[in-house]
Image (cartoon, rainbow, N blue to C red):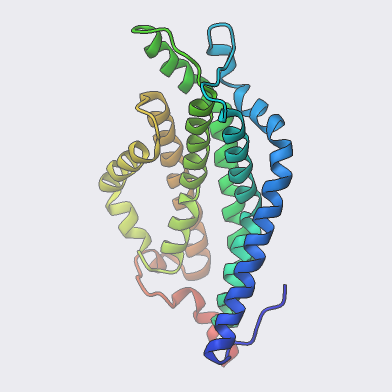
Length: 264
């Protein structure tokens, strides 16, 4: 998709924005229609890690419109996830002309890294978190009542878990750019580790849609591991480019200084 010039009249900018929004809406609608016909297969995949913990392994629907509602909801969510790289590109392409050449080179790697991290988080949740999470939830329910496995409710909880873990796995990218661009010095991340660990526990509790301590602790462990790995990679990058003095600097432009000098 072509990128417009940096300087245009206001109405041309609005026209460019409307064109890109139209592309996004049309693509999501088309993807939703396609995904609706594929939704039975997607729903089977979502049911697979939960069914072993159901009595009889059967889900139920309590309303006449339940089947359509579940299929349509899954289709919309799947379509948006599939179209996310295209949506992000349309947004960035609108703002890209305003960026400097040495800033543009980070756009594509950032989009690729963010997309990969999101899907890695969702896959991690699907295979590692969902089975023990639902086993614990159903076990708690069975201590006081016979659970009725309403498909819509279970699928919605699972999708929220997948999205929550996908978003939480973006943490390394955020930490990396904050430290490498010297918005927050690397040394500050290390000095405030106690507060950051507590904050990550709060975030983990906030983005898990259930009250399951297993999913909360697993998400916290994953975020903690990703945080430490991202800091290790960040330290290597900063020391390689600027030396150890860069670990305590808080200058936003330090990372681009070499490129800016070359352009001058």
